[in-house]
Image (cartoon, rainbow over all chains, first blue to last red; front, side):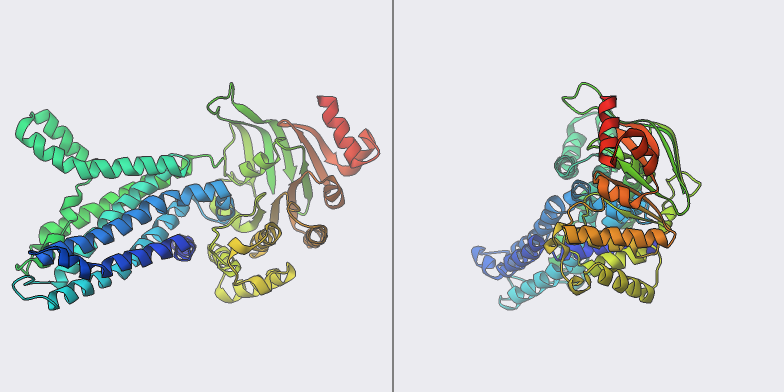
Length: 267
Length: 244
């Protein structure tokens, strides 16, 4: 099974990596990161934090553009163009197809962030070296890698949700709408929960907690504030727990996507 | 090889349609080892639906399908068959060799035998020099031939060909007809659908005439021609018009 999933993931990766729009996205995001060196001039104080936030926002936006403009359409493209028939006429199950698409897109997303991550770090390092120690005291490479991994993990969760919606409905646009709604709920739920904790009753709070199991709290994987932290050692237990729960969540989402896709007619 | 027994299939009602579309209504046929069977009919007759049911892309509402003696849901059965889709399409940014490698990997072929088979079929179909070009630059006929090479790469026992001559120029059509004849002579079983009756007449042992989801005739080409008219086209039109 692994052999077939890798074969499919490989062609999904190659097809994406040669797509002009994605090459343009990488070039644009890298240019935006390099622009970070000029960006710092707009801030009189806390230059390090502003620059770090800017660079992580560029990586986050590049990942989201990849997810919402490429990943949401891959399965519907295969169906609309008829490529799905050529692929599934091989000894590949529908579940293996979904897994192959998921791993191919996850590899593309990782490659995108692997290209952008070092550029962002070098830009931050360059900014730090060009400033007085007072304005930019700490840049931790370990924490930068952790923040980068957290960002990647959040985007892979969104990718898993996209796979689930692609398994459930036909067409790129409905998948885009569902995925955007999912992302909106995941982003907004922590704010609602914090507000409800102060004003609403137990039932509402319980409902919101249950909803967090379905729509994960991305803040738990957001470590970009630590990149400039002077506290160099972090408590790894909650971090590892959060990553483990997230991997489990991704496994459940992708398994459901495989199951739903296996039940559908490919009309 | 294939048993298709009393199959009914409807497509669910779409927005704006009054009722579900009945694609197949009680169609049955069999394809044995080494036989060539042609499914003929006008557009919408149910030819492609039959093929998609055999490949488990869609599932029947009623009836039983057996592929190599078992229901077609098991992907491992597809190691023994090669399929040419009606519209040859691949992810557009792949090369011909990427597709061949995928086809070989999916059937657990080792790299050397995959390369040998790819060279054999791509050369035979006139694509070896274009093997490193991206498929998005291929014409429809080239994509059709690439798709054929992919279907033949793993030396399948059964070939399922959905409109194999569509999109080909007369020379390309003649080459594909020759190739199907060769494969038939090698003992491969072939199921193919087409609305090009001359090609069907030249290639098949048995024929099924489908019209609006029903099988109007099942037998040899000679039986069809002698019972209904002077040529296969006359016979086909006689059957279909008689039904209408």
